[in-house]
Image (cartoon, rainbow, N blue to C red):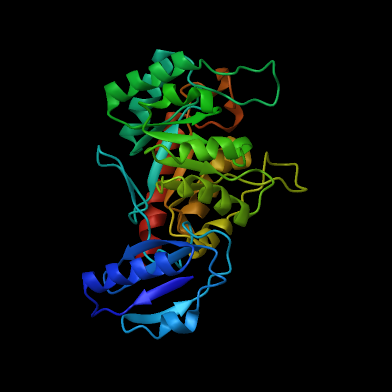
Amino acid sequence: MIIVLKSDRSEEQVHKFIDMLTERYDVTVNTWVGTHSTVLGLIGDTAAVDGEYIAAQDIVESVKRVQEPYKKANRKFHPDNTVIELPTGQKIGDGTLTLIAGPCSVESEEQICEVAARVKASGASFLRGGAFKPRTSPYAFQGLKAEGLELLKEARRETGLPIVTEIMSTSHLDLFEDVDVIQVGARNMQNFELLKALGHTDKPILLKRGLANTIEELLMSAEYIMAGGNERVILCERGIRTYETFTRNTLDISAVPILKKLSHLPVVVDPSHASGINWLVEPLAVAAAAVGADGLIIEVHNDPTRALCDGAQSLTPDQFDALAKKVRAVSETVKSL
């Protein structure tokens, strides 16, 4: 249930009203204070809440029942866009197109530091890189693990770029204490124990949509994290499995405006994993910028032909530089329309 309060209410009235709600009904109350209004979101068993009684209170403007099972991620509860900001100043969701770039897998200090310097020079605000790699084959390169995390931190020291890297298990949480943004991969989107554990952290979480999951299921996974107290969630569309076999996945470009309508959380797009083909990354990235994505996460390798992981979908630093110029131009053009 959503309760919109009148603009002329006092803080004391709001506190007394919230106390009445929690004492009278078995609910918790989330408060969102906007520029022109205050919105209260009632979470819990609201079936017994008397909407007419609530609407009759002097400070109440309107009352609406919410049918969607996700509450904290719901834009109805939080009309303004959420902006994820790091202590170092980088933002996602502030109206600009944020670029996250780097190799699929960290392979060496020379590789990750070189790529980090190149993508930063091209305008990337975050460095991505895999230390723990979930692979379809048990014989494929699984990442450098803890050593890879240390190499990412070295690249951060050299460039100042915050790092984004994937976690695979709750047992690795201690290793991720100094990671700036923790990524939950598509295979773990419904690893609910992991999501609940991440809900107790204060780290931004980049949550990728599962390859066979609906938009509502993605939002419910975000709800798991937010219900634990961590509301710093970034949604990522990375393609879904369809009948088409030409591409690795099919980029659901419609998911971007849908997610932004349903939720206040930032939405980024991963055209690298969606396509699996490096020449498709740029046009898909342009499309994502055109439909209003808050950011792009792009795989960039200094020598894709020798990459230990996903070389076929990786851009060279020069290709990323050209892409960055194009998507920024598209984003600025769309905003000016």
